[in-house]
Length: 88
Image (cartoon, rainbow, N blue to C red):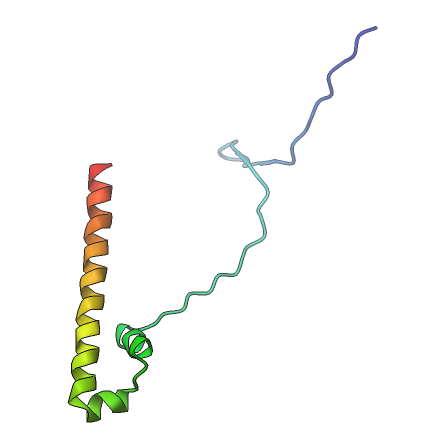
C-alpha cells in the first residue's frame, strides 16, 4: 500500500498574454503623509509664534539659528545617503 503525496494548488491566476502567475492582491493599507514646513517645525521646536519672531530680535536670531542648523542637518543626511548609494 503506497501513500500518494497530496497535490497543493495555490490560488493564482495566469495572465493570458504573458502566462506569468500573479498572486491575489492584498488589501491596500491607508497611509497618511503629514507635510510640515521647515519654519513651522522650527517654531514648534522653539515654542515661539510668528508674532514673537516678528516683534523680538532675540527670538528672530534664535529661530534663524535653529533654521540654519535644520538646513545643515538635512543637507548632511542627503550627502550621506548619496555617498552610501554611490559606494554600494
